[in-house]
Amino acid sequence: MKILIAGSDLNAFLLAKYIKIQDSTHDVYVTTEEPCVDESYTSINIRENDVASICDFVKYNQIEFTIVTSQLSIINGIADIFKKEGFPIFAPFAEAARITFFNSIAKKIMYKLKINTPKFGIFDRENLALEYVRRSRFPIVIENDFTLLARECSICKTYSEAKLGLQKVFENGNEKIVIENYMDTEPLYIYFVTDGFNALPLVSIERTSGENFSIAVSPSNKITENILIKILKQAIYPLLDDISKFACGYTGIIGLKVKLVKDTFAILEFYNGFQYYDFQSFISLSEENIVDVLYSAANGSLADDYDYIHLKDAFSYSVAVNKSEVIEHFEDDEFIHSEDSEKIILTNTASTLTYAKTNLMDYLQEFCSKDVYNRIIHAEDKKELRI
Image 1: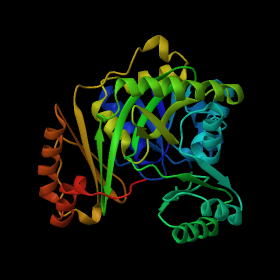
Image 2: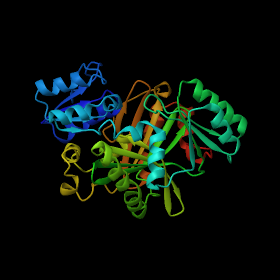
Image 3: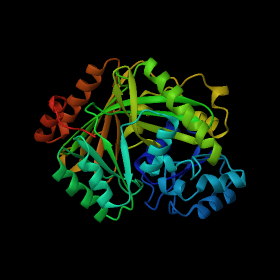
């Protein structure tokens, strides 16, 4: 099959490599201005926001399936154009994806559908936001509305901190901001694949961040089957039904930032596709053919083809380290390795989380600076406000 990946991010390159590992007969193309450095794909020099040129490439090169990781392509309507042309594509319509690009839209829909989310306010004027903050109970969270270019988020413990935070967000050119109550529990990240009508869980992830590194553990033992069922029934399916009324459905990967409250959950925000380095956690555990799953979703036959997404009975432990902290690097087939301009990301999978962590830590000790290695080892002992 001829497959085009519209994107030039780390997830695009990981996906291309993984597709070829699973089936070497696929011809994979990636829209990137960077020269090809991997034999698993062919570079196509087309900008992500030039969806007309991407469409022309698909048409004239007889591409059979397009998978989109680029947020710019999605917000510029690549799915809308491809659907009109009749080209198979795995990506949400631009209108449907707005819940992942605008915090205010996500919050309003959750409020309408009675999906549990922290109490919030949406403001386009600084004086009104300050008045809301003055009556709030601290700590509070201040976030920008439009998140495509950057996610600005700060926890404010006092009114003076909140006042400075509001000034900064508005000075950065944000027309709207969202203020919400802070929940003092660890955030979790859950991803689903959906064809616009049905959805299946992919993976759950816990993250820890520190200076010059970040850690991802998957699956999260805090996300039980009962919690997943509740999220599907109380959030995902109502959300998909509502989107289908105005945007022809949401086809793609939808991620949730979740905090648990006793035996239930609260959703803080939605993501379009895998965030940060979470895709690496998923592919380390997946036993499914990724092209088959995404093609099934693109065709609207997810529920007909799959009862659930098979994962290994194992745990994944990933560490992203700043390249400046790397002393030496060497390849080892036991680990999934990827890198971008700033980070090196390593993932190990084992039957227990302890084994996965120990194996990766032994490997990290060989090529990381002693300082960052010690900080990673002791990261789970840190007790800080995390957002």
